[in-house]
Length: 239
Image 1 (tube, one colour):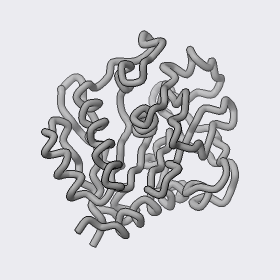
Image 2 (cartoon, one colour):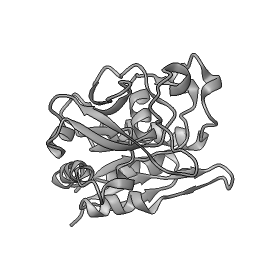
Image 3 (tube, rainbow, N blue to C red):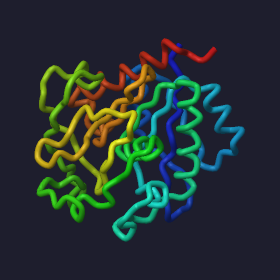
Image 4 (cartoon, one colour):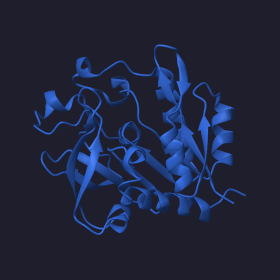
């Protein structure tokens, strides 16, 4: 039986409702998991039930995290947050960590994990770093691609034999101070922006700044990385 993977909802600010990109679901399915979308208005009891029932959690991409969560020094460079989503995801992350569920983060998911564990964010790469590498999507939606350097041994290095990996990019914020219990496993080759992290403990905790769900079919190392996540979830299947 496939492990059940809780996938955090995206947020539509215009319609004030949750929604989901199908490619997140397809990535989890193709990696061997059974994805289920989690609602954003869940009561505390529902969060606990999700943790009791799900074998692992995927924290997806989306809006900026509210600057109040990481004591931002330049909040004017943060875009409008999804307040309901922030509240749910920080609670869900803490609950999942407390019972050692495997966790995978994508884009915003990486940033949320870093903040939840005590790190901070660069409010805007262009302002704080001035990088010549385009980390956002460019008009009319063409994905920005750039290279990242893989650092040391990690689940990422096991998924990809090379030392330099080409990834897509769709973000204007990034990790600034890395949380104490996270290690950096990849950085942007051009400007050293943190591109992937892994937890230092025994629990599976991996997050990437790029969007593997959009490129994994042509770049199979992304699928292999998520397969590690699913395998751990399967091995610790909730009874």
